[in-house]
Image (tube, rainbow, N blue to C red; front, top):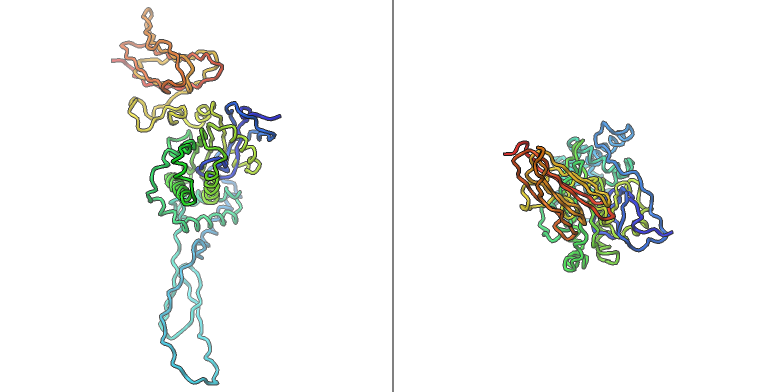
Length: 490
């Protein structure tokens, strides 16, 4: 029996993929699925959606927490890296300086004498330990030296300090602790970075046309910085053409995407116990569908670069506002994803976006357009900031939820994601016989109203503020609020 997008549950996958790029080709290979519904759509034919898997839990990057086999693999990889550095395997070895030209020999009559014997040779050892055989001549002998390479990745010099362990563990985990495979991946990544001069790319000015497409905002509950990818921005035809219309523009997009990723990664703490991964949110609302050929090409190119050169950079990949066609597409590609990748994916339909985000990110850290209370560069409510914690309550269908705030309250703000409820507020004095003060009469709030309501009430005696949300609908509602209080009123 065909299943609708509403029936799809979360799924997650294993391959490692850093900051995601435009869909329709599923971005990351590391998903953790828990699904959530989608709007009423067409049925998804014969493919059955994979069952939910256990959600991915990020492994420790402390050596002391590793299994013995993992510790051995790490030591073996470090030895391979050291040998590769000594032998200049990460880059082409420097060429010895050319020998000074010698004067051409004078023309002479041919003779029957045997040619002179080849010059004797002797071996010199360079600073890096590499042996070189050179000819012994009567000229002054000059030792040919090769300086050791300094190899760095994401701004972290390898073999210099404990951060090396964290970097190498990413490559090992991406290759299931197969040391040789991990080394080959690392070597190829370093060569790719040098070939494309990635370190210099960091400081280039590539414009700000895409700053609304991909941006960093806040942190999740475990301290990972959160990256948002807003694919609906590509509905802007001018932006789409400017970004994807030909190969040159797609390459510029990839350069910009790599620059953004590199800048974001370099802000991470690669020391053992630090945060060395990113939490990624991909908003598929109004995203161009699978029919956009140019977008598919750019996505495929970007995914290849990410999978090959940025292992284990994403801690969790959450897809929100997922349309029915993406769920169908995910069902098709899921068998090709590893369990590790699947375990990092979380897929949520439009009606569960805020609920799912709040599971991982506190509402004061979530942008207002996704159901949270965080507004960048806004002086509209200077009373609250990202540092003021908020509370989340689920209001059941056809029920009324009240919140009592004790003591003297000066200011509060609240929202119900999507509204369709009635909101009221009143002040109830602590002393008996005092009159209740109506601060806000019951007001029907619609989805088109302002997403956040802010109010204040100054009182001269102790009491409490009662905020009420009446949900007459048949849907659950997410109620978010926070407030500031003073122990005494002036």
